Picture 1 (tube, rainbow, N blue to C red):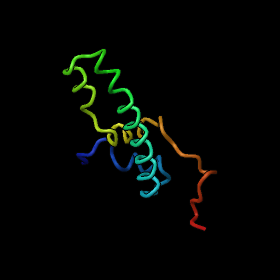
Picture 2: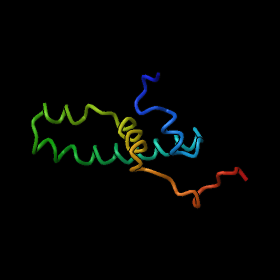
Picture 3: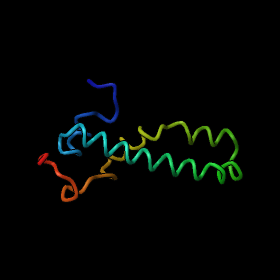
Length: 86
C-alpha cells in the first residue's frame, strides 16, 4: 500500500521505468506550472478574493505535475532523448 498518490509504479510506467526520466519530466512540468501560476497571480488578485486564491494555490506545482503524468497529459518523446545512455 502506498500513501503517495499517484502511485510511483504508475508514474514509472509512464517514464519508461526510468526514475531519472520521471524526475526530469516532473521537474520540467512543475517549472512550467509555477511560471504560469506566477504570471496569473496579478490578474487573479484583481478578479478573485483572497480565499479563492488560497484554495487554488493549495496544490503544489510538483504534485500537479505528477498528477498530469499519471493522467497521461504529460509524456516524453523517446526520439528526442537517448534512453540507452550511448
